[in-house]
Image (cartoon, rainbow, N blue to C red; front, side, top):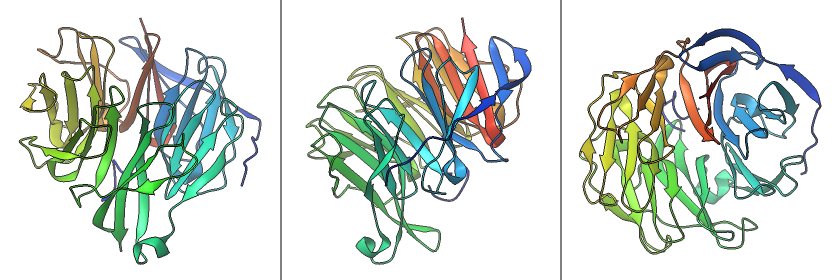
Amino acid sequence: MIRSKPFWTMLCSVLVVLPLVSFATQASWVSSSIRTDGQDLNTVYFVDSKRGWIGGDSGFLSRTEDGGRTWIRQSISTKAGINDIYFRDKEAGFLLAGNRIYVTHDEGTRWSEVRVFQPAEFDGADIDLYSIRFSSKKKGWVVGSVSKRERVIDSILVYTDDGGESWRRQQAPSRLELIHIDFVNDKRGWIVGAGGTILATIDAGQTWIKQNSGTTSTLYHIDFRNDKKGWVVGERGTLLRTTDGGETWTPAPNNAHATLLSVQFLNDDDGWVIGRSGTILRTEDAGRTWITQESATKQNLYSLHFKDSIGWAVGGAGTILRYAK
């Protein structure tokens, strides 16, 4: 799992219903757990208030059709960690597991491998894919790292312009590990990664340029509200904001010391951040102030996703948090 380590066939569903076991409720976050045999949950994604997925280490994949009251285990033909799940629309979704990209065209009922990046393509190096986003129905990007003997030697940036049927590599202007990508429209996108890396495109990903983050800390997640307002989180409480599309990045004061791993704004004012050791921060004033929230867990929280005012966070040892106003 990228956030806790040095670097980041058709499938049949196994209908095993996994009930949640609630153990605490505080500050509107309901903390619960799901049986994962001790594996961490790395990503969560909901297409609406009822239907969602969680993915984790050793190929763990589960879905819910009832807003998280019960979870149905799905089998996937890999033991690699699932690092990201993303739906382009309600039918077409993608997930990343190790060096593989999987796709579904039937609302996540079945997943098939669409691309595997073999070590032979990279002079024997290992490929880890971390984040996938689409800017339109046809165009999408994936970022990650290339490593040998657990040492990152290059970044990987691949793209599709045919809806994910084929993927081609694009050379990024950084050899450092690339961890997360976000697009706000078909032209504007950003990537963050190790060493304070922020890359931006204004031409639909044809070219990427470096932006000055003002930090060398690893940056794990980026969220833009529009082509001007954006947020980045990273190591040791790093929380950055921009109001000019990333031309300038400034630190946002907060009292977090733990590494921050995911950020999402619901509107211009309301934003959330999660991180290690159960850290949750919230702002209701467009990020001028950030308040620590009680999470009722000390597990690392790796992924955050809000849909229709309902929030989800997942993390270590099968931890799941749910928030609703």
